[in-house]
Image: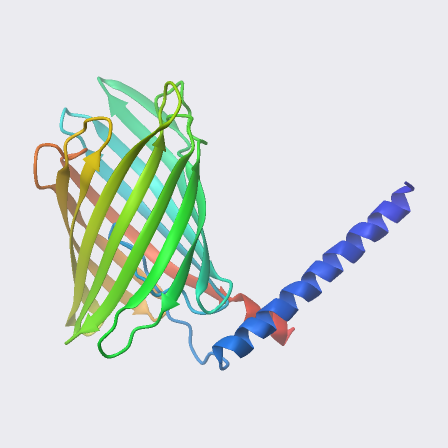
Length: 282
């Protein structure tokens, strides 16, 4: 095929994809009854392990990034830079990309540095909060083995996560409850190790834009014989602006079976832009 024909075909394909994108966004907005946004507000998933059932605002692209310092039970140390990109493709469907951008581990006096794993997934909210009923959602993610196996930073296997989420506001408190089922690819041999995790989070405003958050979570069982464990998390969040939220806190083990002794973290959530709104405007 001539080069000019190939280029023309690509231009047509891009143009048709762009038109389809606009049509889908218009149909989704009509279905959701969305009005033009007067302001964008962040919807942080940080700093808790649990995620809220309610997703990012329709058409908004949002990013979260944080730094973790993890202290192991046997003097292990880990420092990592983790991120999450979220885009609300429809009023109830959010596309998600989790990335472990930088991972630095010290085990037995040996330090290794590299990229961590990445995960792609979605979250679908099938019920909105009402007076007596919480918001409810389901999510799925597939973790890709992008971390180095030779350095001991990853297993080289694909992992799956299925999660049920519920959120409710009660008398000034916000609650998130998650139940997650994990399928971890075994480093050697076939099959998966399976694990169940449960999370309960609560948050309450302390003063104006300052909020305190607490969470209790743990793993119920692991089919490779690992014992169940429990962890507790405490954090403060501050809304610098409606679309910019910063957080900091500590995550600590509640029993000796926990995978780490203590984790310190600091992070930020920022709503980048209303993508659909920007496209329609132009």
